[in-house]
Length: 285
Image (cartoon, rainbow, N blue to C red):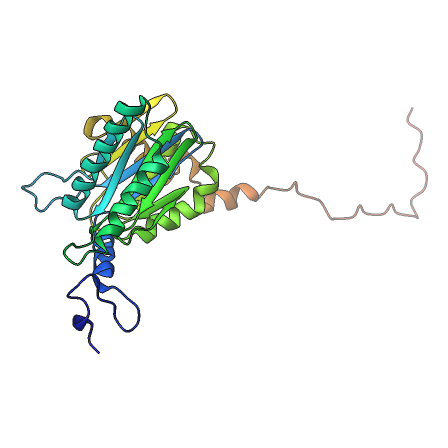
């Protein structure tokens, strides 16, 4: 049996119980540029790589503001992500208009996940080919969610999605226990290092990455270009290996000569014994 017999319709199941159109959408997420999210007790940081089609084109933004207390980063088909971002903004506005309060992050993510799932259950639709990292801070604290084209969603302490995301996950798995007490600057540096691990040919700079942060008493803020340059420079300086000073380099010959301490000469010749036949000396007058 060939796969193309069962992937012409999103609602057609294969004999193995798989929906190939949904798997194709999940594969589109893996092909997108990397997006990293990590949170502490008071802040949530999103770090993304911006991809350009050529040297003549500008970089494509991958992080968007949803509300003052919430934002999202995406990996996959950016056009699908913008549609979901518009839906999330409308939901936040409607909730604020009716209840005069901010929409809880978990409730909005659940609605977005339901919207993902509806597209997998209608034969005239296709799944959204985008994965979202939703960061927010509400009355229950800081939150980081990941949504999937299949309709699943999970809350994470730290997460990375997109191309070569496994390298960023490896970094996050080593440092996630130290994230809760981190302040804003430390969390941003961790996010930049995780994104830097996903780079293959290019070098991390303020033009090909962006940072978004939200937290306690701080609205959702996006850092790009000049605002991000100090953090990128700090990460590069910390990652540079320490160079030994010239004074600290000592020649091996000098060390050997210094260890050779001249010992005082010892006279091993024994004193000649006095002649026994010689009598007592006369007294001096």
